[in-house]
Image 1 (cartoon, one colour):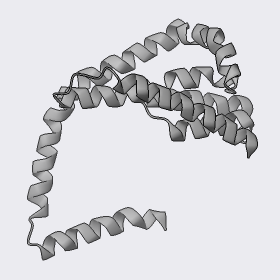
Image 2 (cartoon, rainbow, N blue to C red; image 1 turned 60 degrees about the horizontal axis):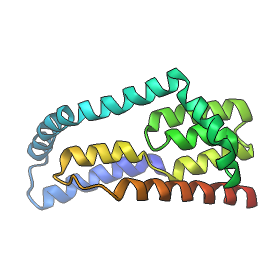
Image 3 (cartoon, rainbow, N blue to C red; image 1 turned 90 degrees about the vertical axis):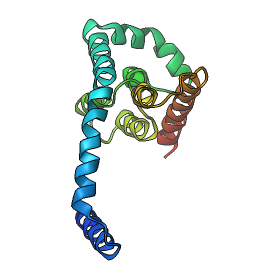
Length: 168
């Protein structure tokens, strides 16, 4: 059924636009034209985040931090195997999926660690990536509380995810 959702949505959209006498192709081209400058404006911000995360992982700093912070994470019920995932998830989505794949291959897809990692991936967001994209497109520059609150909420979600996986 899910394979038909997107085609049905497109057909519905074209029928609706035809009934409203809207030229869909012209609007599509206009939207695509507006997307190119947007991509060019956002690209430097995204590239800098991705390069910084790649450098952190390649240098081994994330492994050192994970080892250092594992007692703190253990206190909150987060397995030490998930420390690197929890630390990198706010920065990068693709890097997090790479760590998730590594967790699957190391511990198996049905293990407690893998289940926790999946729930963490589902209940968290790439906070710095999203903030970078929104900040680059808006005039809002006062983010004193937004990022710390988002990080705190993400950490609480991680704690609850591990607790739920342990109970269920």
